[in-house]
Length: 115
Image (cartoon, rainbow, N blue to C red; front, side, top):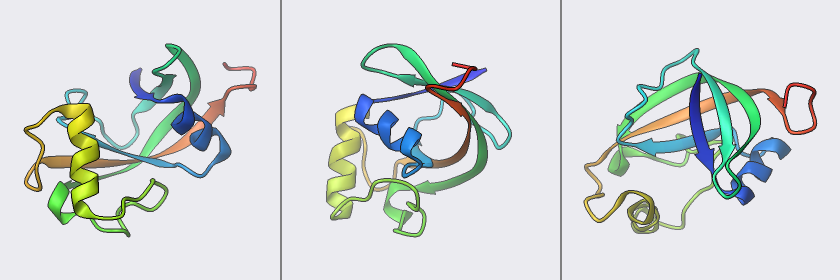
């Protein structure tokens, strides 16, 4: 099973159902539709949910628009989006950086018997 890590506050959004997608750069996991995922709280190291990928959209960061970010937190500007991703991925991130928008559906979450 593949894994995706999220900060605690984003894990809460996922469990509430307000966050159903994530934006990933430099996909070393070869994430694809149908992949099952363990969602991990990166602050605690614990699995908080299981999910399945329902859609993958590939674009450069400069091509991403608000429609692409449905179910994902939005930024005030493209510059803010780039700045945020530089914090996670380093200073080489720019508008030409390839990105994957990963949409997913929860299969189980914290409090379910499966977790």
